[in-house]
Amino acid sequence: MKLFKKAIQWMNTLPKFKFLFLLALFLATNAFITQQILNFKQLSNHTEQNQQLIDFITTSGDQQILPLVEANKLESIPNKLINLLEYGLLQNISLYKPNGELINSSEKKLEQPTDIIIKVSELGLGDKSFGYLIYSFKQPTTNNYSENMWIYYPAIALWLFASVLFLLNKVPQNKTSSPIIKEAPRLSYKKELQQLLKRSQSKHSAKQLLIINADWESFNNQPRQPLISLLNKWTAHHKCHLVSFEKDLMILGLPETLNIELLKKVQILALCLNRLSIEPTMLIHSLEFGEEIYKHFFGVVESGLWLESKEELNAEQTSITVQKDIEIEVESYGFLHLQLIDALKAEDATYIERQSRFFLQ
Image (cartoon, rainbow, N blue to C red; front, side):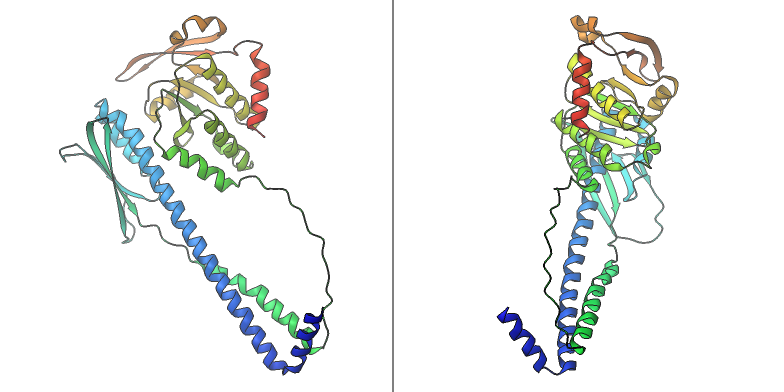
């Protein structure tokens, strides 16, 4: 209190306009420094996000093109390259043989000159090289953060408030306010998505693929965080990763071969998606086809969990009820045997229900 009174006395000895000038200078300097710090943080976040997106595009491209090159299915490569160009940052993508011969290339029309970032990714398994991909990304433009001028508004308001008090020779009363205790917030949508993409950028081996088809557009009006949190928690808990997500097809890599426990995990995810008002159609198999084949398949079958085959389950077959059995012909592959399965055992229902509540917390 003594220090506060001395400060008031010193302020009263200053000429009014000199005090207001010094106060304005202090507030303007403080606002300017705060603005620069905020601009730097936003610019750093913007750069980091673009780098994460570039890494994700190159990883996704490698995972889609490598199986085609390895199987010598060169006719499917142009469509894959065109699909990759749907990413805004990607300007050009070219596929070359190990000897440098161009296999295929696709690019977008450049609207205006811009700097290009080149990324080269080798396609290979072990010591064997099948070629390499060259990605050309547009140099991400930095946002104009001049809108951070709002930082000066509180400073101006404070200066006007102090001016009125000083000119009227009124000493502001010292008011105490009770502290507000806030609960620790959940991870933001941005943080959840960053964690999901970070794991997907790492090198993973997938023994099975889980293809999920759903009307994701219908989820636009719903809160994003429950869905991202579910996918983030489920993939992390089961050591899975996101392979690609194009249009209505989400492809997840599963680290284990087909077994009863794997089916339970997928059924838990299906139940969680249903709780979020998403009706998925799922397919578990060990192959990887193009988008057109998946679209054709999901266009003719009903919702539920489909298996490429249940022959690998051997003695555990008795715990599976097959609702429907179909065969579809896949070009350049032949006939594919698919089965729609029902719930496993009745005693598993409680476990699946309990796990779904855990992942939706």
